[in-house]
Length: 270
Image (cartoon, rainbow, N blue to C red):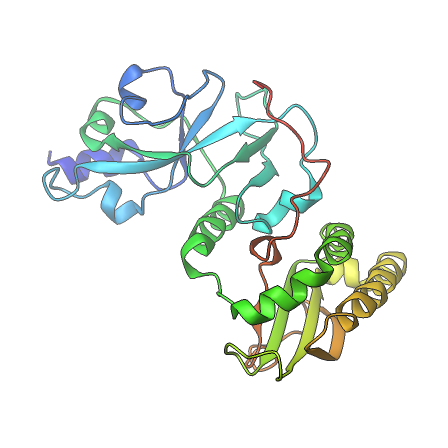
């Protein structure tokens, strides 16, 4: 049986979880891996089961650390590019809540998989969320620095509004015109779309809370010199279309010097 067939038969795929109980799993890591961590295989399956170990000598893992409390809303769903928190119900595992940092990844010798079989794996939905979060490190939009500096004049109050919005919204999309560096004599125009999960959008109490914070955010953005806020709206994931987003970019506001969530859950081993 060839290497590819052997790996396929064993069940190796993207999303498998490794218990770091073997020193060989840690030898390329430039960070400490606690015994109660899990190593999530993030390499794509075609690379993972490739026939040639010369062409594909390694596979990549992301270290998942346990949390000692419920995930923080500001880190759920991959909203923050520097940290993600989530809950998992993995058979045979007593730990429910986890967090990951994007730089805590390393490569493992792929030949080690020939001697082992996977014990557990993530379901498709959380796996897609984690992969999208990782890819954002490389694909996020870089806004003009002159736009960012104008927003940052109201950094603290704006950060507080987004911190309160975090548990309520799924995405923030923004249209900035013109999308280029401007001198102080010229003004940006801006539209914002706050997108809520359809269930939250349809809940009257949750929607009212989001609308209240939206109005407060609108006021703070209106205080930014050199930015004209044309519109800020709340939309449902059930109604937003690709056409609606044609001129919008996702706003990853954690990269605009906003503060991290204040009440972030801490790892167990601190």
